[in-house]
Each structure stands twice: as structure tokens, then as C-alpha cells.
Amino acid sequence: MYASRGWLTGAAAAGAGLAAVETAVAVAGRRSTVDAAGQLVVDRTPRSAVELGVRLLRSADKPAVRATVVAAVLAAGALAGRTGRRGRLRLPAASLALAGAGVATAWRQQARRRERQDAAYATRPLAVARPLPPARDGAEDWPGAPALLTPVEDFYVTDVAMRPPVVDVHRWRLTVTGEVRRPLSVGYAELLDEDLVEFDAAMVCIHNRLGWDRLGNQRWTGLPLARLLDRAEPTDAARTLVTRSVDGWECSLPLRLLADRDAYVVLGMGGRALTASHGFPARVLVPGLYGQYAGAKWLTELRLQAVPNRDYWQGRGWPHGPVPVRPMARIDAPAHRSRLAAGPVTVTGVAWAPPAGVRSVEVSVDGGAWVGAELAGELAPAAWRRWRADVVLTSGTHELRVRCTGGDGTVQDGAPRAPFPSGASGYHRVRVHAG
Image (tube, rainbow, N blue to C red; front, side, top):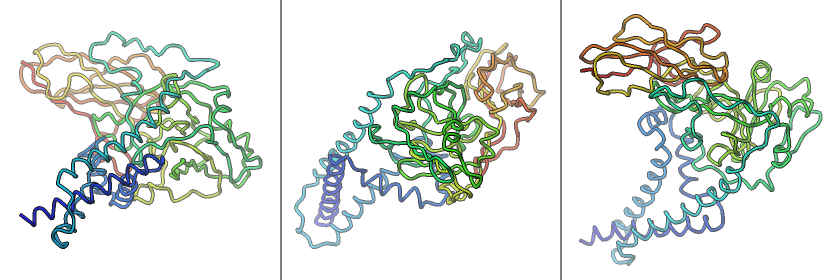
């Protein structure tokens, strides 16, 4: 009995201490100690373990890391209580519940700061001098078709920050530094006064696997990156653009690549300012590059230099990049393992091949011949494209698969490969039963 009491007392003491620290940093507006410890875990975990965690946990990877940190603190306290002198600590076991409530309250306080920021800024429409026509592609009445534009609240979020930073836009500045003749420093209000443009583009996470939804399609608002860089007058020595986040994360982009591709300082999506999770107040986006190579969220600096950095992802074993998005198609309906009536079936989905666009989509049943699908209108070459195909299924179990061809003639790679090191490949396959 004394042994179990020691375990519980030690764990309760550790939990109470953690709750006190988390409450103090939340009141002070500082970073969570659990998040700081979690960041160390993420940054030092072997790449293979990170890849396994993403595959198994998907978007629950960060909550799992936080839970691991808290469990480690409680375990250390329990061990100390077990090995320490009996009776030294008198905290009741109920303190564990109180400590948990304290940590939850502290984390909620931190979340409220981001919610207040989003309420103040992300609900504001952004003024665009020449708005694009309404987003329509002719597939609005296709049954089972996914949304043409992914709702902001459903748009995937992935980054290496344990929580999105809350940026004070009254103090925030975006600077252009390094190998430039005229360094720049502009504030948020100044950027909003720019001649902002809209563009449609899909963003794809390099961890996106066949059939996953770690991608989204949106109408973005921002200004061409070249506009700011040109004002700063790069020197002849400038070869690399480093985009830097307020939390210190950096990403290097070759200037020669930016000369051939559109690139933007993005201020909004869906017609409104960015949310904290999506990079408020600004982020860099290069359509056609996987997200981890496309530029920093929570942008604070554009630095021109002669040579590239050894960026975060290169330190984790990923290629220096940048890595272009692979042409790929996804089946959205019917869902995997659906039970359908035998006979005609309409298969629908999306395909993407930025920046050249999608030329064609084909569907195959049970490994048979590829049959062309009907394409909806093209919103933009960098955006995804909806498609549908009519097939006839006899009674029994069938496998549907899909592939696309890009506007430059590149046919989707059918060899199944994991995301590391250059993005997943293969055909998305869905099994259904007709009867």
C-alpha cells in the first residue's frame, strides 16, 4: 500500500508542479514548457520514427508528442515518489486530477490568444483591385464531387511548430535583407495597402500519401514575391532566397527557380486574412513545390545570400530540394469498401499537376484498360481539377484505380513509393463491392 501511495504522491507532485509552471507561462504570454520539450523531441527524433508517426497518427502527431511529454513528467515524479522516503510528500492522489485541470486551463488560455487574433484579423476581407471571377468549373452539380475550393477550416495544417505563434502585428515587420542594395522593412498595414492579387493553387504536403487529404485547393491573396525583391535591388552575388519565420525556422529557395515560377507573399486565403494556423500575418507560397519547400509561415524576413542554408529539413535527412509536386489523382467517391448496386457507377475525384495543370485523367477497373474521364473546367494550372468517369460494375468485389497526365505530358508514376525523399507515388486504389 505504501509503495502504491508513493507512486501516486510522486506523480501528483510532478503534475502539480507542471500545472503551476504552465499556468505561469500562460499568464506571462510565454511559450508552453510542454511545447518546448515537445519541440526538442520532434527535432531530435530520427527521421524514420517521425515518418512512422505521421503515417500512423496523421494530424494527431502533435497531441501525441504533448501527451508523451506529460507522461514522462508524471512517470519521473512517480519514480521519485516510489524511491523517496515514505511520508515525505502528502499530496493526495486527487492532485493528479487538479494538475490535469491546471494544465488544460493553461493550454486553453494560450489557445484563446490565437482565437482572439483570428477573430480580429482572419475575419476581415482583403481588398483586391482586380478580383478573379467566382470560382466555378462546371462540376457544381456532380454528385460526390469534392469541393472545388477547400474550406479554410478544413484545409490541412502541418508544420514543425508545436503550436502556431501569436504575432503582434503592431510590432511585426517584414524585412528584405542580405545581398541587396536597398534593404526594406514594411509593416502589416503597408502590405495590405499594396496592389494585392488573387491566385488559385493547390498546396500539397510532401507527407501526403495515396488517397490522403494532406492537400487542399484555395484562392489565395497576396503580392508577387518578385515585387518586394526587385524593390530591394538584389546584388549580383544574390543566388538564394532564405525565408525566415518568427520562430526561427528557415527555408532556402534558389533565385533561378523563382525566375521560372510564380511565387507570392500570401496574406490571405478564401478572401480573408490568414489564420494563425495558416501563417498569419504572412507566408511564402510557391505553387508546384511541396509545402515544406515552398517557404516559411509566420514570415518575418526575406534574406538574399550567395549560398543556400542547411535548412531544417536537410538536417533531418531530406534532400536539399526544392522538390516539385508529383502529378497525382485521387478517388473521392465511391469511398473505399463501399457497397454499391451492380450496374453503372460514377467515379469522381480530383487531380493535380502544378504548375503545368492536368491534361487528362483515366480510370481502370480491376486492372483493365485505362478509360478517359471527363474533366471539369480548369480553375488555374496550379489548382486541382475535378473529374468524373462512368463505369459498369458487375456483381462482386472490384478495384478502381486512377491516374493523371500533366499539361507538360508527364504521366503519373505508378510505382508505389513512400513520401521520403521526393513525395509519394503510385495509383490511388479503392475497393468496392457491387451487388
